[in-house]
Length: 319
Image (cartoon, rainbow, N blue to C red; front, side, top):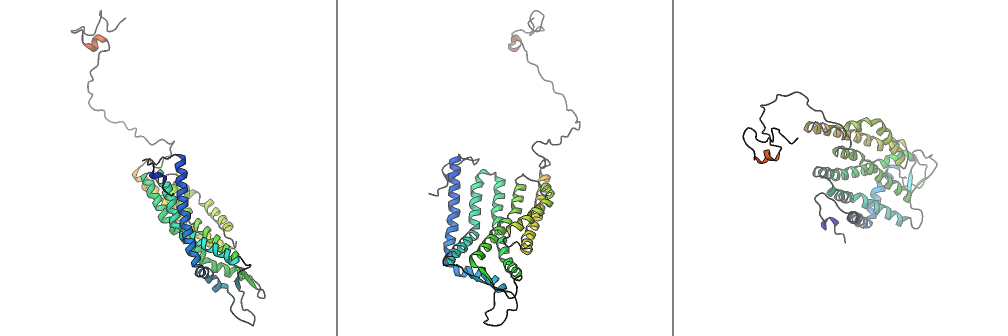
């Protein structure tokens, strides 16, 4: 059922009919979804441990101490499940998020395997680098979201008046966690995309560097819209690493452009730009005589010889 369409028809240039491309895309999607679902089912069996792993740092940061009397010395919060179906829906959300995060190497590889046959040999190496660097970057962004969540929760709960009670609905809390994990993970892929465009010859390092003002502004606006809490602390914690990774990607692109220029002086030229020509006059070598062929039938066949060879009536051609 999941037999690859490329095994049925191989082309050295990676060309395939549209129907074969659609079958290949279907197979890759099914494999990715299957991997996510397998890990999701496993995560359901370990749901209790995963839920405590996710909520543990937040509860330690802002959880209310177990006391029966006396005023609270600082604002605190409790995680609660509202409704009869809330525990079941939360289990599905937590398990599915775990499946997507843990299966990152699998679906990134399926994406590369779908694109690889249409790439050149050197482009395939870049795609392998995309898979090798994409998974750690995504997991790094997801871990950053998990690490900053207790600090964010502490800053927000600190705004609660001392005589108020603060409750975290569990479904809303896990929605925030899911969004932050996915947004942080995908945002960390932006520098990698810029590097791939540079290695593929689409963008130069100077062009990417010239966008730095717009990129910093765009990353800041994106961080403000993407963070579900909307507080400046979380926004800064998301925007700062992406800006650092952006300038790191610019440095890699500039180094690659320099390396490419050393190997090929015309590498930096666009498709409609002429390369520089060396117009310095050079010495002309020894002139070699070239024998001319007769243009008339008699000259070509050699029927007429002597001094008048190739002539008719005293003329070189017919008049």
